[in-house]
Length: 543
Image (cartoon, rainbow, N blue to C red; front, side, top):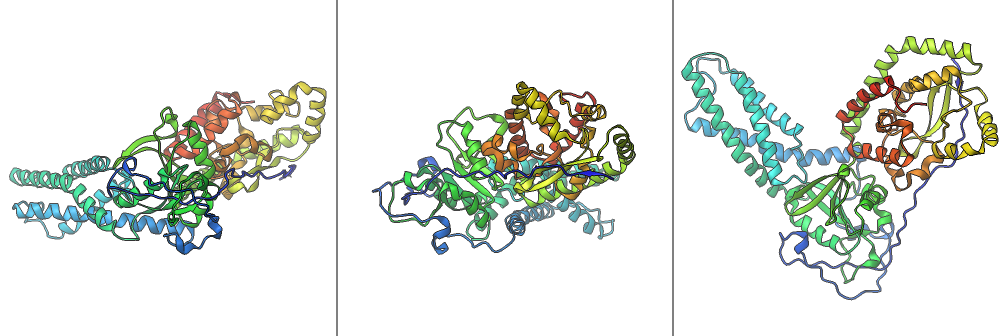
């Protein structure tokens, strides 16, 4: 088997933060502990000449937050468990309470003539179903979940469990069936009515502890961020505990208290990583809403969940979902692939897809290998260096579709046809590339040349679905979004491939990649895989 490794490592890209921290010390005063952020008064005093040291230079004891000790994935799973278990316990308690109410009313679920061992099966089965459906509906850990939305989801869960339970009824005495239906109706009503109450009581109880709730950082451009920090810690029942504020120090009025100041914007990524901050609340005071996502990608790209508190309008709907929780209105930007469980799910899907594809396509691989060798001298495969997750480099493999001396050929061709250089520099490809062999044109038309990347997927260098892998020269075109690109594995297929491919502009391609990162789900991957088959069959945008 022949391999080609003609590539130029190039220069790695880097994005530099563009903000400078100067002198600042914030001051916040609250007239009412439960007031909304907009009602919190900010007490500005004099502009101090105190120097605010960088995050890496400050004494950690001044900032009230846990020291990083665990690996990031373990720390997240640990906090997820600590936050979810109390709410799970509240849900189980409400089931016990519902059964107790029915028993006090003289209602029975199990027929006295049946073996008592049936209770060992029925009650755990109902409880397990309730918990699993709650988990699917996002009730664990239920972070930043408003009361109205929580009631809606609990009602849906209880209804599904009740319907499943009713479907398990067996024909018998009409009196016994009626009593069971009454038992089920009463238990259902108790659960719907008291489940939110039990969970609210548990939230308030756990909010008094230091271990419950996900760590969060507050980010803003003025002193309003300190008001949100105080408000969030006064409303710990939402499942978030604010560690402090990231802001521009030179823009603030100062007093003698800097305990809640974490650092400046250019230190945001490092602070979030060190403090295991899985949430960020971004207090937006920018003039243009479109810049919000650019700021999030640049400074908070390693934070899985960002909730943007904004008074702006006109922010593109495809970025977010608008919500209001306990008076805190805004929209949420997610990057689920920053979390260990979604990463594990995606990796499992990649392994299944790559192994199945390798076995099914083995005869095609063999036939194409022979055809390439016969029709064109040179290696069968071509390896080219691409940018991977975490700004690493790897060789993406393809069936060779060009002549052996492709690099020299394109150089000579562009010298003879300078009018095509703009197209080459813009897209890094030509619509009528003279280097492509006749067999190569056919393989490119049907995207067969990229099938060897199944090996990259199996090795964990690529994913079946993701942003298109890029070369070093393309990094500047991603601008502030390059860090977002580096948060995930590049894919064999993705939104770009099913939304026009080469018929789209590069700017549109970048937006499609960023959209995918913010909206990833297993269902989106399955949808894109199905769309890929349709796109390839009709050869849309391929050349």
